[in-house]
Image 1 (cartoon, rainbow, N blue to C red):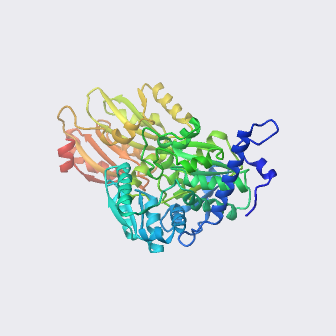
Image 2: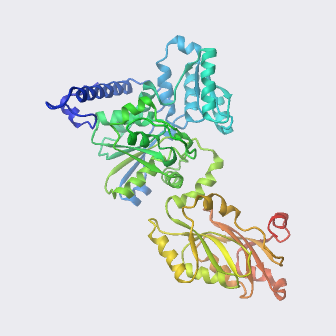
Image 3: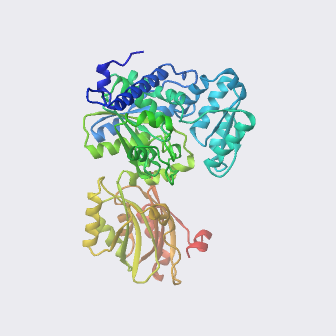
Length: 539
């Protein structure tokens, strides 16, 4: 292993270099940091991971690279046998145990990727493993841990209760505890990710973006990279509602967050690990925070370029990379992010897809008031112009005014959104921008509507609109002028056809000819006026 000479030490951004004027304390602190860095790198070089983990590739991201005018690369830890990097640290930690410790069995409290990594590592070594998981853990993860041979104990309704019970089992049975991140051997195992990156990519590399939860991965990556290539920036990326490293760096010490968001459950940690913080506090160049919508957009980006379906915490680093480019205006650089895992529940994908366009700032969500009279809807659509309407929710409720919930495709950056809002207001429409309103995005879009205040006759039909600009205007143009639309619901789902529900007040003379008009339009349709769901909840 190379030793750290004086010239290399001057290149490292840690501590304060000694000089004749320096006091003894700063010198001692710097030398201690140097020794800790050397010791960490040595452990990384000696780590035992490849009996269980595989060397994952670096995938180019051609679509992203063209879009952002930088070479963007993705380190594919989603391709590990347990679909995350956690197998590295878990196996390396177990490889350091004595035979007596292994004989007692190992235990961990985890609801995520560490549980699966430890279960696999223990099975490969022939060691009994017990994983304590909260009762609310998704069944897919419980079954994944059991399938790898570990005993699962469900305890409590939150992680804290599971962790407390794990300690009780240790006291009762003498199990050996395998921590998820706050351990130097675990950190060394995760650090092999950086070792592979520098070996696989020998050319220019400007920055590596690392997802941060408890800090095990970024500690290993930062130590190895800053020791061998101090010119490369190491940038941590955290979910804005679980940014424990950013808070610790700001305070100069570890702090515990009052609350932690769980949208990116793989990094939902209230306090950065003690050992990781000692390593990274002087090594990371920056920490970027991102929100849920930005993570969802990054999940889609990874899929578009690699066809991999990342978990939200796995896409966290790419979301930070994109934000870095937007904040700094970086061009012509080589930037790498670590896709840390792909253990996502299938039923979350719909929600992720819904938030993707918002995360890219390509969709505006608006509440617009229009007059309640025939022709108003068509006039509003003409004002919107040739933009793609991504969502439209409306239900007749008042004889004077109609409040519509509409999503419209816009260009990223916010300027185009504001320009469209200004255009609508100039046309006389009251507009409320709901794009950043969590209540609107999570609930109102699904609950908007209800029942009309008064009884009236309407015909209700379900349609398949071709998913192209102008499809809505084509539909409206073919309807007679005196038909009043009393219900409209549409949401773009990325398919070739949009699913649309329409209610119409039709004059008596046209009742028998309704479907003749629809046949002329050419869209597939189904009459739903007698549907029990409509009758019970919307009629």
